[in-house]
Image (tube, rainbow, N blue to C red; front, side, top):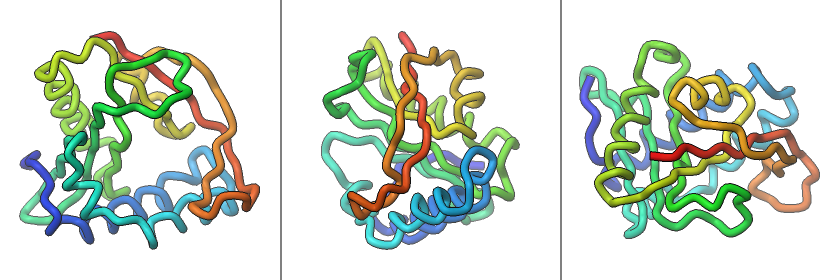
Length: 169
């Protein structure tokens, strides 16, 4: 497996991984309605712009030339984090077929390496319930739990619990 920088050409593969991961692994923590609302956001997201964003690091994991996972780190965390991180891991997603085979860990380790390289002292993230044990295994502490609106269409009322987490580097 190779972990490399994502390029805008990877946008559709990243969308595919994102959707498949939500639909395949999301039911470990959420009901069908929540998973559907969460996955619906994949359809209209501009993955190419996200990959090419100046303040973000986006990496993909490839096996035999196929993208099987992706991860993203941004230097511009949103306001409202209780833990006040320097950077935010905004995504670590893998295809369900490779879940728990170390792909997510390889992606995360690369993002953390880059965060350290940039001189960040603390990284935060908002974890879905199924992802919390993964991040705890990588040294994250729980900071807060809150409701999150899953739909890309604000005001739909489809919410679920998420966990804000932080790691000091």
